[in-house]
Amino acid sequence: MAPYSFHFACFHCRRSFKREGARDQVKPCPNCGKSAINLGRHFKPPRSSDVAQWAKAEFLVRAGFLFQHVYDPATSQPVPYPSTLSEAREFVAQYRDQAWSEVLVETQAALPAA
Image 1 (cartoon, rainbow, N blue to C red):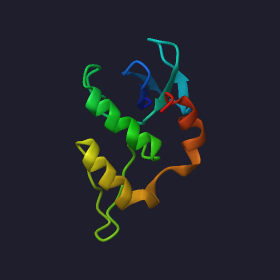
Image 2: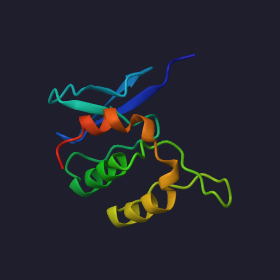
Image 3: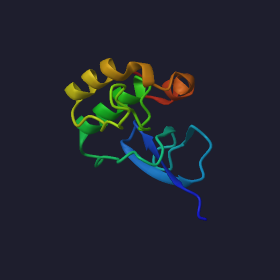
Image 4: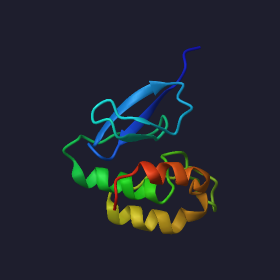
């Protein structure tokens, strides 16, 4: 069985790359050398030029949502990640209790200064 590839996102240069079997939450970006964050298998990186989508993704990561499954408490069904920054604000407010608080210290340090 082949190991899974995980998406790492660099919010400094708006690039992503994959690594197999990644256990590290943060790795150096091969493009700029700054920190890139492991956003798992489900992250769909936007184009480098799509600043709005990178801003939305960074907002979600800052809030502790690392593109893992989030479930609707009423139905126990997975909910899709938001499409826009304004939807992301509502998403964070609604599902804050499902944020990954235990990895925030390491990921927050890897994000660009706000």
